[in-house]
Picture 1 (cartoon, rainbow, N blue to C red):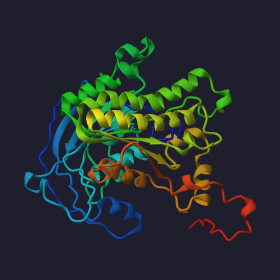
Picture 2 (spheres, rainbow, N blue to C red):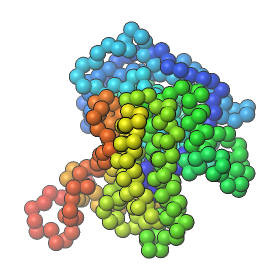
Picture 3 (cartoon, rainbow, N blue to C red):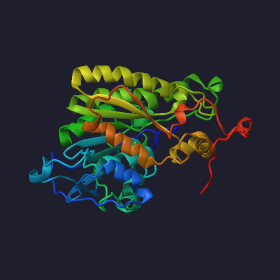
Amino acid sequence: MAAAATSGAQMAVIKPCVSSSRKSFMPSRASFSTDNQNASWKMLASSSQLASAKPSVQSLTARPGKSVKFVTRAMSAENENKPLPGLPVDLRGKRAFIAGVADDNGYGWAIAKALAAAGAEILVGTWVPALNIFESSLRRGKFDESRVLPDGSLMEITKVYPLDAVFDNLEDVPEDVKTNKRYSGSSKWTVQEVAESVKQDFGSIDILVHSLANGPEVSKPLLETSRNGYLAAISASSYSYVSLLKHFVPIMNPGGASISLTYIASERIIPGYGGGMSSAKAALESDTRVLAFEAGRKHKIRVNTISAGPLRSRAAKAIGFIDMMIDYSLENAPLQKELTAEEVGNAAAFLASPLASAITGAVVYVDNGLNAMGVGVDSPIFENLDIPKYKQS
């Protein structure tokens, strides 16, 4: 939400020393329990077989003298085209770039994990100032528990790129940013440069995910938001998607999919969600429809956005009252349960898959149905009505 409505703010990239094309794949079966906590994974798997990581190790140089190991997933030619039972979300042989992953508790991470569980190869873009911490956490195994997939293997990130989606190319970067040590230590982190690096390293992608949002004045009411604060929110949270798609769509394979994350504040009043962030989300949804037409006609790419409910992520805490928003949802949504990041990730995997081949230009609500409500039933005015109340388990 705000600096926060998605899983993180802007995000960034590293340049690896290896080039990779489509890999060969080794299959394995995933087994799923009937535990409630694994229900969303079962829905994603849809009784299908999932590719487990049979890693071949690559070395990636993030900085001079610094090496990071990455593993690439793949399927054997023998099983790659073998039909799967039912209606599986099957993304084997697909490559995804997720812009906006800086930790393991936001929607960006959950989407990456769901795509990986369905067999996709994962590339991520991480905001430059957060890059070192993110990479260090990956190397030290801090995220290992969060990386576990339904088949017991770990989600592997083939490559991490430094990315600041506020800047389209080097000409847009102010001198004070160019000389900032956090940026000068990274190479090729503007949107154009990252797209070019991905093309050089991998040739093409199939899935593009925008999980970026930032509103420097999100805690201010709109009437108190400065012009600079308002435009910064639009730039980081809305135009960044236009820019990403503009630069990545030339290297996206026909039939590919692009997904962003929005929030109900785009169309309803959410007091406290300020700084122009509600306007930025409204712009993002409007742009989704126009981009769906343009990218669909010119490149055969589908463009959708997910309107996700409140999540207790690090980024969401920037608005200052995320716990109250989650409590409100629990009391008033048709489904009285706390939304999980995995549920949003599963919806993204579906939208990126051939199962959603006719869906584009859509705002898909993943919020336990809260978007459908017209009034808050937790109000004392409804206390005498026979309305089921949320009970904390």
